[in-house]
Length: 373
Image (cartoon, rainbow, N blue to C red; front, side):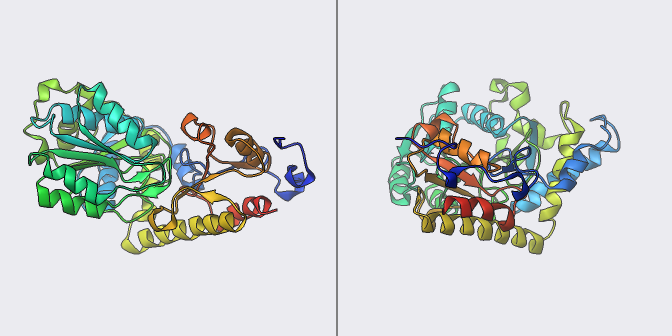
């Protein structure tokens, strides 16, 4: 018989005195939106600036500099939208490339599959390599695919597969692509700001503000160098998705809400130095490692093996006979918001705990203790 949050006493919500605000303000352990630091929320509430104002332009360019420094110096274009918009800009760029037909897409989860679907919407028909959920890219298979491809093509995959928690071998892919003369395109939406990233040898990469950087959703990033995009058939590009124009324009090309840029600027201060960045990466690794170890000790089955996992997201199967949505609701009754309602998780009976936002070990330990009962 399936259990529900109202059944055995051990599954009942804690008393109000447990933590006064839990029922009204659940602790966010989602992979997006994420829990925000108070300073980021304060920055969002500052007076709105006109996006052409003299005081706004330096702020906008400073954010671009901060993001570039975070990934090894790659230039960055900003777009108002989610990470999916950034990937659509990339897909449009691939469709405008003379080597549009010479591509390979790597699929190892829901978001790799979305990249493939986006190429199809731009009338691309790339080669495809696919792996089971919980598996990482197989570089030997990729090398064989490269051997069959003319030089000068492209390969596109998801670095940190959000759906599974697997962190794919981006440095290994870059090395192979260099050897076989291919250009690397990568979705870094869920890896950016969780682990050190060097995108200096990547052709194009995407990220987003509402993930591990710890700001509000709404700004998409495309990392690229303008000189590598001058050969495109630009007439094929929608005006808004023109990455080259966004890279070569000082300030925004179109309207950008200043609260999103201001809060993003504040969130990026965490990564202002190598030392502060390293401390943030270590914090994510420590809290994510705690989640994994406690769940394993409690008997939960975790999808991604530790050797290939990003600690920022732990995808696992519920116990106690609960479906994924029922398990999510149980955790919510305890004051925690975790992922599991999405169709791609629910249909596989999986849920997720993410520590990409402003959360600490102290925040997650009560939930882990309840799950261990």
